Image 1 (tube, rainbow, N blue to C red):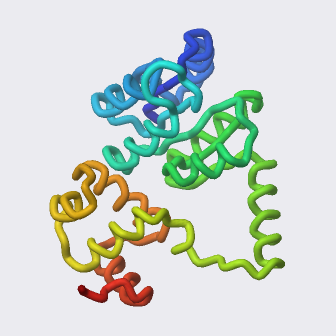
Image 2 (cartoon, rainbow, N blue to C red; image 1 turned 90 degrees about the vertical axis):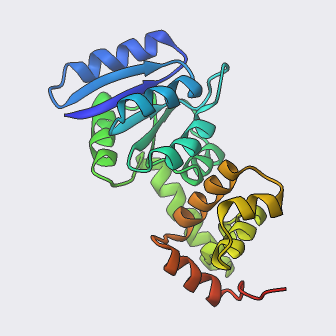
Length: 217
């Protein structure tokens, strides 16, 4: 069975989702949470296969912040954003936060079930119109001759963490140099690996060499 945690600030939404999923033999809702903080605690306790995560939750952490932290804490858990926001900005931010899927609350029940099955298998899921928009944007960028280099998707801080990691600095040393916490370093490092599609430290070092990031002062 697919173990699921539902994170949404509306009790009626959580109840409806639980009833829908419990009616199917392949799903097991192991916990509910009303905000990102509760969602993280529940995820650490139950280690679910999939987390259904709302974006806008007024109390505690929002869905994007919680998703970003959970991808570091439980990288094998798939996070499926379930939201009312049919908006490109939220979509791209969710992808960058490490979400495995993005689906609207207005979607038919069968589409939601398909999305859960898809992300539980390690694949990505976007609702159809979002996929079309992403493809159109990519095509427009190529027509304009814009670079498709994944390095451009990194923030300035992520580039700094990439360079220092490749040079052999430990997380604590990087944190001291950049005046940030070790936890923040680990989060940035995870985002770098995800955005660049890297799986190991040697791959990271090789990539940094190609980008000319290994010059020492």
